[in-house]
Length: 479
Image 1 (cartoon, rainbow, N blue to C red):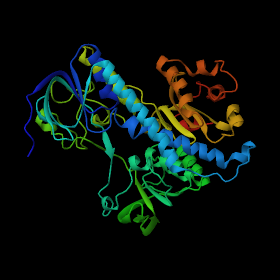
Image 2: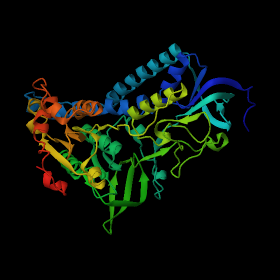
Image 3: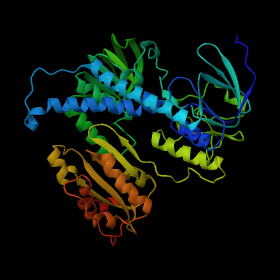
Image 4: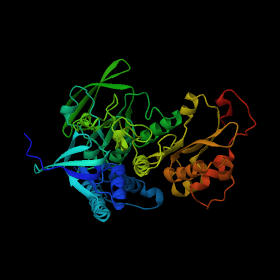
């Protein structure tokens, strides 16, 4: 039985969840004079600064430094008796997170938006009941509501998996000792980034993927490059494996029973990381009480303006089914902000850049070859190995390649992919050209500083086949 509730409190804007989009909506509109409250269950600022993007990149960078230690002789530096101190790795990450939380609290204070720590659920149209950890219950009513509850790691309904108490990215980023043998269930972004980091700290690592190759939705050359990278780093990759049951406890001993190409196999390790996808945090908040519908997969149903099925209620970020990137959530904020203020902004046709922070990075903007072929879209392909970019040689980081897709009948850039050092930074420059509608020749003919990674765009775009070629099969244009 719940404690007695308080009298309803009225606000101009309520935000349920303090993720990237929600917090910026709150701060911005509070500064414009709206009485605003943000309800957050645990992570001030959302998952990105606390348990996801920034902490993971912090730990990944520590692992990269460790990899440099292992390669030190290559750079002319001898080493003796060095070791990984996981409590120190964790402390560096925690210190960064604490600083980010303080930064967020300061921004709440300066904006005038009220931050309420507690669990919220709808009890009516634009009415939210908030229960704090000490049992205090408040009822808040808003003229407008923004839902920003995010997603969580999926624990698949595999017999024994939940009972094995597997690590998710949250626990994996807070380890105080190196796992003897980490089994990574899932070959997507989270699984690949953390698998490499933990391997570089000294753990034995096995990636178990149900599809025939890693990042199976990406082009074959990207998957092949990742398989080669992990083989070189001593990471075992088991593909086409469907887990049938799990035995044991993560942190002690765990067994994965799998069916692989019709044969039964058993994989054993000490720790298990579940990285098979995300589940929206929409159950338990009683969206039906607010007239807000969800999709078959549990995401909040929204239109191109990020409006839900209830008037003056929006949903943003992962829980709305937006691409699961913080930078997309930030754009969700801009869309909702403008629409609340009377604008007409939509998600239709927006760019979705991404970067996976393995080492080297994998970044892409626009169409991949796979997507272009599925659309039946002919293209001209330019591709160069990263070793052709002289900066990569100075860094001893020559692994990877760049490639670009150019429209057949014009010089428009359709897509750009990099697997290599500083991939995210190089991609951004091509993205700006795509936003501006510049032909690829602008980048080909530019003067970039030497030696930089960006300079590699010149030989890449110099390799674009001539537009005069007319073929039915795009393969004929591949160099």
